[in-house]
Length: 362
Image 1 (spheres, rainbow, N blue to C red):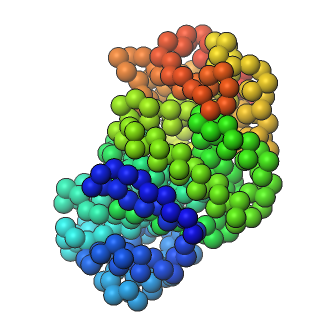
Image 2 (cartoon, rainbow, N blue to C red):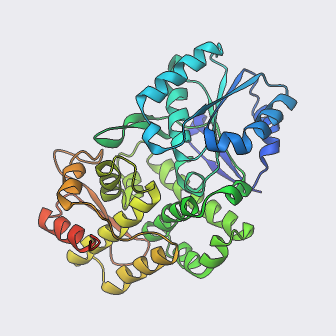
């Protein structure tokens, strides 16, 4: 087991990596929780791990209940949140009650938003079961839901009390979902840690084969890198924006397709290649490094091209949360692995040119 501690004063919390779900009840008890517990999961994860988690909570003495939301990004809405508020009231949750988010990024974002807003804030615990949520979305306190015009436009910064990661849950994760998580792990190597990127290149076959030691390292290092950024800039006033590498175009692709065509990590993969090629056009990066990024994403089983009308993507980009004073901010690789620059003056003709180049021929 590895532990990464996110140090945020009185909101400091641990990330436990490589721990069994059968011990989640004991982990909550060690955190001195004593109130009711509501587990929020989805229909897929609940079928696999719901009974195991509920048994562990019961054995630890908790009065626990579980609710399952539909599986999918399209259900990450205020309507789902409103239904969960009613369930919180039906279960008579109190201020010392705990919400447990059991699932991937969608479940974590929704459950965290409910925890942040019900009764003006309940403690919550992230129990990520997908690679994407284990390396990224469960850490850092970003919670929220989508608006039809923009991803994650409605939300809050609300830190969990603990992140509890059982690597073995990845054994039941579909390959496409696992690959999508690799996109976020690779992002950290590109923007912050050349050595990490090189290790992922070297060990990619083992990681995709679920070699637990290599997967545990992948999750642990990604969490270390993210916690370092979050500690310095919790609410994205500056440095934390680098974590959005690939997301400006990635989110626009998701929104343009109503969250039905690409998984989040797949859209981010396309977005990272587009950002790298924008950097190439602006002479911030050389072709060799762009090709290296493309090559590992392809090896990871991720798309690097899209099939959307470019005008639709451009239209969605302007709704991105990172737009300031009408200017779209791009996080771009700068010079070499591990270095980035944030640009808000990328010419639209450059964006359009790259998007056209990355559009699949039909």
